[in-house]
Image 1 (cartoon, rainbow, N blue to C red):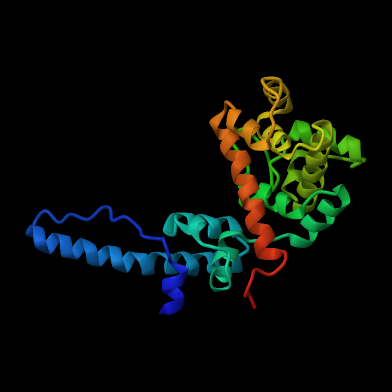
Image 2 (image 1 turned 180 degrees about the vertical axis):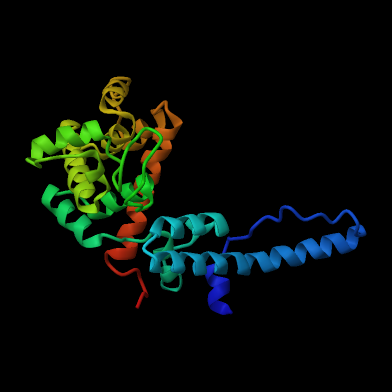
Length: 250
């Protein structure tokens, strides 16, 4: 029980869909309090069970969604030994060998790539967005065709973007290309990956930004601003989960 209490620190879940109108005020308060206490421990346990099942079925995106739904406070958990199993379900790393291979080839941080993939597709290799971006790294077919020519990938078809290796190969190449064009500015690179380089080039002219955070705060599109912050947060968590062991971890 101690492990569960530690694991679910700050994960209180609000009650919805239950009516206490037929109870007297004191009984209603007690019942709600009981439900809240049970919810603190039961809902995260449901999240863990569903996420483990999803991973066994090679559906990491469903595992991530289960964690988000049943344990929405998971981002407040410290990356400590007692939380590692839970956090690795929330931040899985499938396709790790491919991801690290192409990240190394492009000389970019693999944990940042992992953070980007989690944000783009939740590691769903068959993801297809409303804008018709495909696969793990959510590359548009037109962009994929151009990138394929650049790297000498012959016979490109849009459905090849569903292949994890092709998606990671093209996505990391595109990320490296943007990073070089933007003089190594990661925040601007991520913003370009999400919104397009033409927008970002214009935003960079608005001021002489002394710190990367200043640029991020001035991004006028909320979705892109949140995207950059989320990818950087994801990368930090991945680095601590799968890089050097956290302090006191075993």
